[in-house]
Image (tube, rainbow, N blue to C red; front, side, top):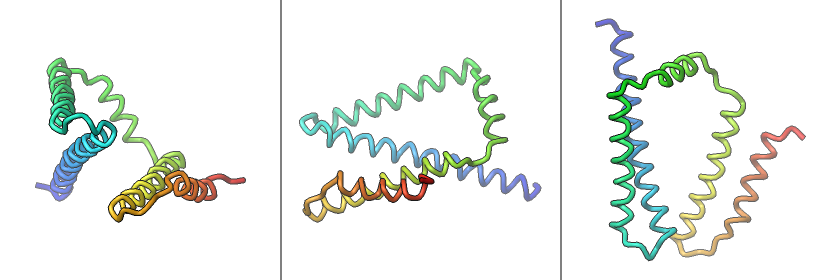
Length: 136
């Protein structure tokens, strides 16, 4: 086996593992957010609802796979192989990081029982974001 084939297989396995990790974390986050948004709804009903949506998506994927729906996949593959990161990609990632910073500060405030002004913290992070990306 060539070294390039071996490295390609390992990177493919890493990518698949990251996809599974992302699915798991998204499911966990969805359940947590729904429980916070709907505190009167039983936790297990929310879990069953989210898992049924997940199972439905898996069944739909299986049906599309058996129907050999590959046209859009091939177009997407061609598009992504020749794509470079743009300034918009960097801006999107920085904006998400700013949002996550505020959410982590909010979580720490909840954990410590301190009051937290979400709007004020978000304004600070957003001004830093604008200062970096707005050329004015």
